[in-house]
Length: 549
Image (cartoon, rainbow, N blue to C red; front, side, top):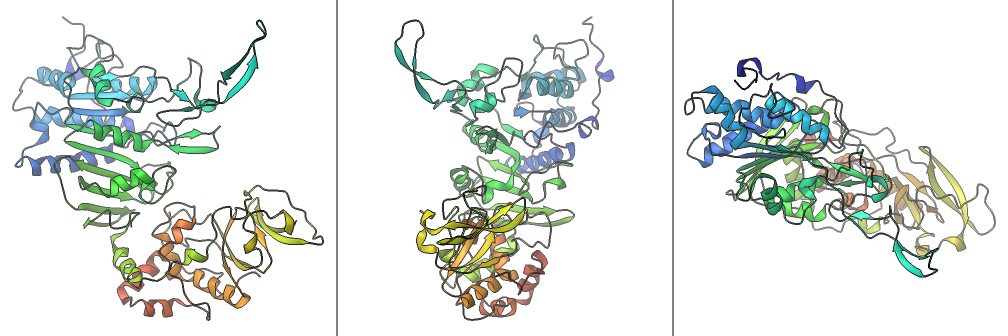
């Protein structure tokens, strides 16, 4: 007798994982429903590549969740394998032991999630415990590994200090001032005591992931399928900047050369994201991406969680070379799948229905409107700059700024404008850097513009279009207010931030009229269906034709 509970008494509870609160918006538990949709896609891809064979009926296929939290992916895989292998391995206990010891593996992201994942998969937080449904493990961890990992701190500040005993001066590193070489985490934020989680995830804190996997699971271990939902970001620079890290997990998983890889990650990589340019380029040109499902509103899959820009799932197939089947899901509306060339542009146009419109506009080969658009922080002042005064003095120019979501005007000496001084004496159409987050449809996309007469300056709260006269400024503002203009911006704007790059596809016009959508639709030869699509995505704004000067 082993003293373990009979297998029949240790069944799964498929509902418990829908009731667990998320750790944070960065470490999000995957709902069982989403996990099963991803497994369904995986099953179809395997069958197509293996003459219709079921992946769940193959006792040799190995699965890894390298950042398991609740254990939902592993649990659902075990459930499917238990059914699929029944004919080949009739004895239930033998079958389950084989699945748990030979096919299903995980790497937990924290000590807490390691216990949770083991409880989900083994029905016990100890793989070799009396209540575990496995019989063959010698260790409490089983095949779900976790050990505390430390960050590797680099680029610490150095100071010359005098040794109080010897009086000798030496150059020393200042603890707490570095960053992690692997994930860019701030040492000030994540250089923690032993009783706190480091969030130094083992899967991405190594230069040789194959060797690391060999250390954990055996030198000859090769995973056929990698699946999961990685941590999304870390607060860095003292918590003032969020650093995306999910791309590192994707890259490490690809480096393990599985046959199939499927993950759920933020969609921000498609058009934006700090430090994601190289990752975006790599993903958009990787023809092994077989399927992509985009959820512009993250709450459609993650209840109670806000992930700005939405989330997506993708299926990467090592043996595939072709177009990607793209599906967009927003609430109950499903568009696709549509076969897409992800690398047609430098960013991904999320809705396939927009592509023909964009092609028509770009085929005119016109100069971009961002040629008259300022850079970020054009005059050198951040949004919290306060080196100005409330009353105008001789030699001052007006300075436009935002405080506590309210626009206001201060004054600063012309002589203190040391950057982009040539733009002081221009008429400006000030546009807020923060627009909508893209969660609603139809969306207003961009915030209300404001015309600033010449001379004038502004803080980083605004970008601005610069022209020579008031009438030109009014014309620019009318163009900005059109649905056509805001639609083209929306194709590159995936979050609230409306950076200069988001205006790249908007063509420059002549500033001799008040622009209307009807005129622009006609100019670019848009069909009635294309106009209807634009107007279904972008709402009219109440401030059109009413601009502050």
